[in-house]
Image (cartoon, rainbow, N blue to C red; front, side):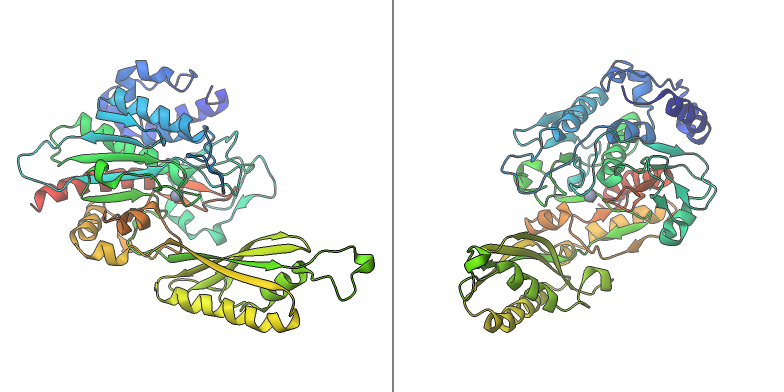
Length: 456
Ligand SMILES: [Zn+2]
């Protein structure tokens, strides 16, 4: 069962006048309280389904991923949505739909033009962040949002404030969706999944729209940095790709951070505190001293735009051994070495205070800024910009202070900039999405595939 009756009524009353699609296709919109797959049999209504309907179906499926897990995907429940998307793609009549042993869902819409057009990929991830629960999501649909703060019914402390959400202005008079405040919403990136599925539906329903080969990809484990771990770029078969995993409508991304993770491990010596004099080496104190001395102005909470940061984010251990994980982020890849030097200098300062402690510093590469790879062939970004402009938006390139699956894919030779979804406040119970933003993303995709044909 997917929706409460009250939500169904709310949906029914607000969706119908807002989405002319239903009227256009002359299909009666009947929301069935059937299990997730029941709708597939009703092909007529399925083909005219709105992005909001799809989105609401996906967000109630718990797909939270998990850090530090050997299995892939990191949680089996992500397959619930990956399997559903597989079924839905087949029901839409897409070709070559498959789900592989890792859970990657891929499908193809073959070219319908004679000219040779580079194959384009569209990719979204199904998992939600491990930071906030994604179980029992109760989406709240607000029709014709009137402006002002939004109090969420499940937790009085969670309020989406106008002052902290400049994008709310753009949402006045539009439909927005929030969680009830007890969970995240999952717009990151189920909005992307719903956008791609609706774009597929529109392309198949309107064969007069010219396009080259289109490859669809749905991936698990993006939020734990493993979205492309086993993704076979060659087999996917796209020459250029786009992730649909951004936020503000009109915002496009072709620059991400370059990222390393550093682990500082302190080996101390534990002994009963009663007989510890001159013997104990307390790793907790050593690690605390290191963290306390890290520069506070180069932190996520003190930086913005292109500024780099050092971010201690996991602290664990005891007297005998303690460690801190630290994120290094910089748009300039070479700058990551400077951040490492800062940590090494800090360790060198602390070492003489605790001469017997053994302190190790280990740095691992995470992902790299996609800019260089995307700029090798300017078409991939230029056509996207034009597609968003034709959707009536004022597109803008914004650097992402994070990474996307596109960072890794670009590194592997598949240039993959990122498209907005209309979502905001990701990884938090304050997450919300502007349905108009999702519709504009669909329009952008449909424009984009045509521009690639037009420019050949
Ligand atoms: Zn995401």
